Length: 362
Ligand SMILES: Nc1nc2c(c(=O)[nH]1)N[C@H]1C(S)=C(S)[C@@H](COP(=O)(O)O)O[C@H]1N2
Ligand SMILES: [Mo]
Image 1: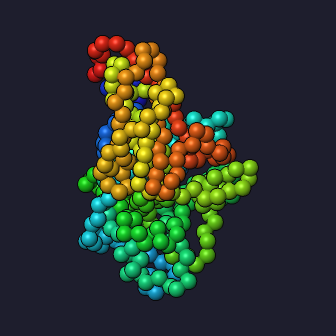
Image 2: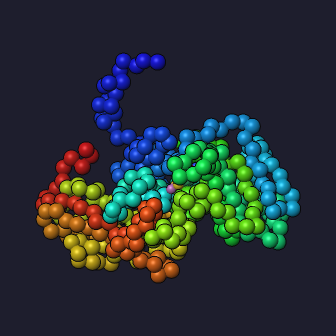
């Protein structure tokens, strides 16, 4: 198929804002655009995408197997899953590699800026209900979630499958879902149709897409995506990546935008280890306590704001969140070889001008 118009297509596309900022096309890795980050709930088409392999396609005969160290293994069809009670959870999900580009030196891996984070309404069936139905053996230790996607890796022999294990208490948490819907409509292929896990509070890698099996294990899983990826590797010593670290992001004024001197700085803060208790905002190194608002759910990001009078010219804003566990965003993170968990305070530059700002729409 030859399309003679392709040469001019990219130009036409710059006219309207794209729903995603593409980092890589195959497999698709794409960020939520900066222009959309101010929204409390990310529009469906702008929810970030992170896939390690080409995506498998959903089909009617898709099944979910529940097996391993259980009394009654069983398999469910999509129709059987659709007949189970639905549960909805509004959750912020962040990729562990988000803001890898802010690390120095930049580690290898997808070059994410700060948009690999979205807040989305997920619906599906409770994972705990499926595990209860199967009945766990007494020596059950963890739950392995198996994806349908696999492929070769440079640093592995043969095919590697996307599969990740979760501690049983996390798997059995009432808000951990086998999700079938996002925003009330069936999952799109990129987001894991027809079935995926949604693990609130954990970095995105735990929310296995294109789910085909839930396997209860009695020994720790050490597969590729458990021990070679999604681990903090500091000088060769590895620890697993688990819950999202406390973090915040200024979304208003927009980065590098002209702002009137008297303005309100707004942003989001989130953590997988407890509610946000404080956010401080710095204007050129002068710190102020921001007002923390109400999160839309226990797992969604928390709004903060601060009314400020900016000095004229270029201004550096920074935000620093603290959570209920006492964790605070650091000035710098401990550098790790795979570039995960960069929750360091991130400078946000704007230009303060006197008088009214025109052309904000552009
Ligand atoms: N099967 C499968 N599940 C997966 C992945 C994957 O590559 N394959 N990527 C994980 C990672 S690293 C993240 S951050 C989230 C992203 O989910 P999303 O693409 O719906 O935003 O999916 C996770 N689940
Ligand atoms: Mo991720």
